[in-house]
Length: 462
Image (tube, rainbow, N blue to C red; front, side):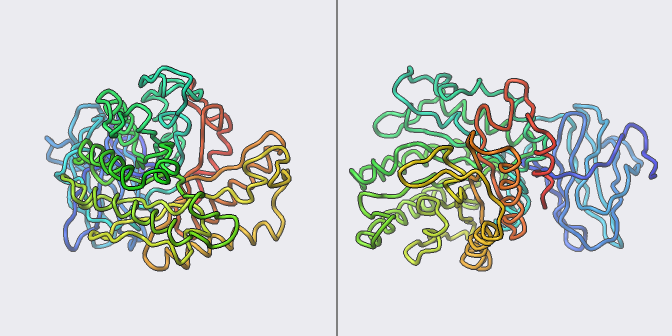
């Protein structure tokens, strides 16, 4: 066993992804070396993978001599047992190469690169960012709540669908379980005025939660969710496009100096069934997709025209109804992006009669089992479709939602399906983001997962 020096307790391999990161890079050395401050610890990652093992070294910034924290065969480590508020230097060496030195203060909640433009964008590609995200989870049915039965206040929206008020401790619990990215669904128009002007107190609250996500070490995907875009665009396309643009202008302005840990997503599940019946025929299909493609283009143009880091920000483009078949249809077009930094989002709830219902409905008979050869073949078919149409063409894939719900099926079936989907996605290099809501996998009141063994299997998928 390698000896651990002074107050350094351990070097532990991470599955989490750094958002509030400080970068150090230099030609000829170990590339992409970066550090994320935590409570009495600093998490380190680097991109080089050419050495058989790496040595992590540290010292107080004010000290002259280096100490060895330990050795690892991986490209990530955590140095623990540090003193909060103290500045430390770190470097890593492997083979004949050494990283430049990165300096970070333990316990710092908002490192410079999480918000400020200096060092906030590392130059990594969108594919590298998506690969770094690992396994993700949604903070569902919370800041995306809608309805007409409650007074329209910030706290009422947050709790309307059963969630307690979110705390930093709750967010940290997701990160501690090994999730690398949190998708933050937000319904902006519920509290906005008729022109889409967002109240300051709501924007402040969203920024607070985004900050907690980034400070935890997770990436954050921020979207527009239950904003009733389908009906609004069908009724008045051009007028609604003005409101949509206004909302994204405000979001872009508020978050313009945040680093690459924050990704914007154009919309959630949007399509236009009064224009084209997706369940039969092709009448109106081209028009519906043209409308949809125009919205995505407006999203990209709006973000790229804003300031700060937004001209380089990594963006997530929703597909039509976030449906894999529609994403792969010839009518769907990825928007023109001068930065070339877009991923695509789809959702996976297949078969719907298993994942979405627990009793028979007019469109299907509820299933209670899954796992036949045909079931696995169907899963692979859809993963292959996204691989061929997007990933292999250089467009990273994020499965922004997936999940299996209902009281009519056993826990073993739910877990088998969930792990299979996450594994199939990860094998292709996609990032799967589990849909989770109050009363789901995570006990928000106690900031812990109800079934930690299952979550450990899920977040351990590579």
